[in-house]
Amino acid sequence: MPLSSLAPAPLPVPTHRAVDSDRRRTSASAVLRSVLAHGPVARSTIARLTGLSPASVTDHCNRLTALGLIQEAATLRRSNGVGRPHVPVDLDHSRFVVGGVHVAVPYTTVALLDLRGRVVAERRLNHGEGKKEGDVLANAASGLNTLLAAAPDRVPLGVGVATGGWVDRDSGTIVEHPLLGWRDVRAREVIHALTGVPVHVDGHARALVNGERLFGRTAGGGRSLLHLFVGNVVDAAFATHDEVHHGPRSQSGAIAHLPLAGGTELCDCGRTGCLQAELSERTLCRRAREAGVVRTSDPMHVLAAAADGDPVAVRLLLHRARMVGRAAGLLLDVLNPDTVVVTEMGAVHREDCLAALREEVGPDRAAAVVPTSFPDSVLAVAGGSVALDVLYRDPLSASSSASSSRSSDSSPGTI
Ligand SMILES: [Zn+2]
Image 1 (spheres, helix red, strand yellow):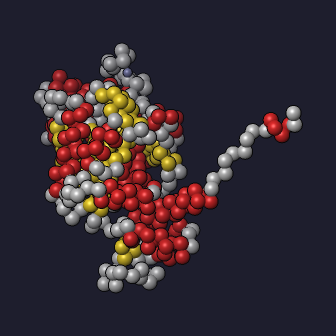
Image 2: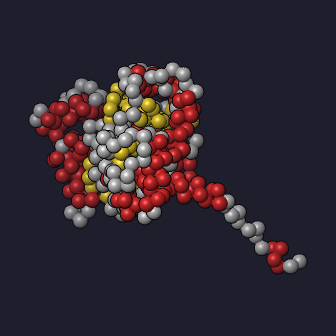
Image 3: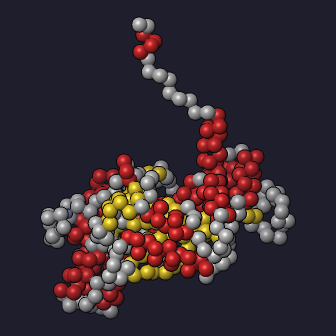
């Protein structure tokens, strides 16, 4: 037998068409990201920023304009032509929106975001007693419909669904959310069936990394970024070179049961001091109730008590912030990111909590830790960022697939 017959079969060579389509997608994404970061911006500047030829930039700008994603900033110019190359272009944020759904343990947040990630409408829907997935998702879809009905001139490009726990982006499934008692919830399928627009699903820690990459304080930096989400669910996400790490079946970032030194809270898993049990808002509220600070399970009431000068509330929040700092230090040791973004109520709203958190991280790395860029709208941004990430990665197909699904929907104002 000749040796050559033992050689592995040659790898399939991508067709020219596939290569062209990849290149077109990447270039369109780079152009739209440039307009997001720098708009209004001249086409010649986009060419310099992206390394694309001026002709290619003009071509992409024409496509993006035809889709209604960008427009010439100088509105007095003729509206039907392509304009001269030096006329700046900017996002057209008057028309398109994305829907956002964030499912927390006690309530769902539904929202509409414009192309800059700004919240244009938002509603909170309490779960009430029942937290059945079918009811919660149906309420979310109906809440989005209500928001869109109140904004008839807005066109939805897609819906992003974000939640904690284990969420598999590829299958659009909430694989496991222990605090809600959900398993294998096909959120993408359910919301799509109720709305008729493309739906994308992801974990909220990853979604907020994408929000930070696109619209946050450090947007466009392209450096490594870790996001630590501390609500009732505690999880994390990591991005480097503009890519969020998912890992097999999107299981990356599950840190709920990492042991936290000094933790005293008994966890459902049977151990003591697991990160989520120690840091969760449920634990904070229970401790605050036991100390007579509040009577409710709403962590905002603990924050309000601290703002009113209750020393026990302040002490509880500072303790929690220090423990969050300890968790951030652990993750810094493992991943060594340039920036750690923390979404934690105390650190977001109180300087003393942020200072305590940073002190625990240590002086060398304290400056790397920053609170979320979206202090007043973090859950709304989480949901919407899932859809906006898809749009900015592949603007040509994301917006055209939304158009085609809308064309089969004859009822304006519903999605
Ligand atoms: Zn545990």
